[in-house]
Image 1 (cartoon, rainbow, N blue to C red):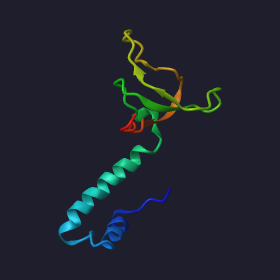
Image 2: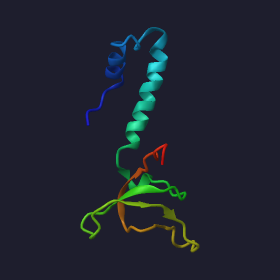
Image 3: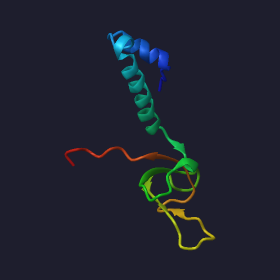
Length: 105
């Protein structure tokens, strides 16, 4: 995936007459939101995953016999000596958010 810098993205938008003048701030906001959405599509380290019950997509540690992703969530255990666990997968290494469901589905 090619990553554009803010300057490159603003220059591209300027080609449509949107990168400067009264539209500059809107373009900067668009650029920030666009980058935020792109980041959500990338696999992220498991240490950054939400542990509030939110369902996410997990990727397993290599050579564990599990070679596909799993939709899971963090389950907090009642035992205070054990912090919790990912349901359905041991030792995940990466996570990403679930995609937005279809509007018609």
